[in-house]
Length: 114
Image (cartoon, rainbow, N blue to C red; front, side, top):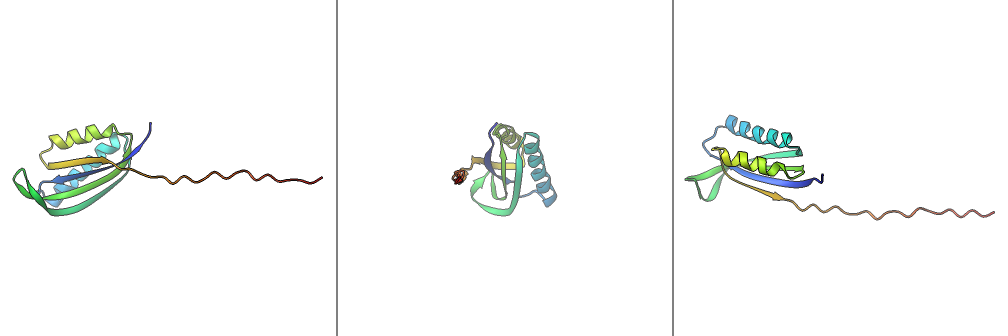
């Protein structure tokens, strides 16, 4: 199965204390691991003002996760976020990763003179 690189950004309610934010981050990180994702990197970007009100909130705690996986974990993760009252918005994108191809070296032929 081919793996792709994904980025999920989600916004938590601003009234959550640091311990609850940590629990939410750990919950989604564990969920990804259970679904086969790996190389998970999490950044808690902290509380920021929203561009517009979302569910009557003017602020939110932003969290960004970058990870690799087969792709089937996205539906499970987004379903868990949709059902959670702590998450007010989320978005997952597939990142375009460019891998530079290294030209194959031609085998060096040694000419032996007899």
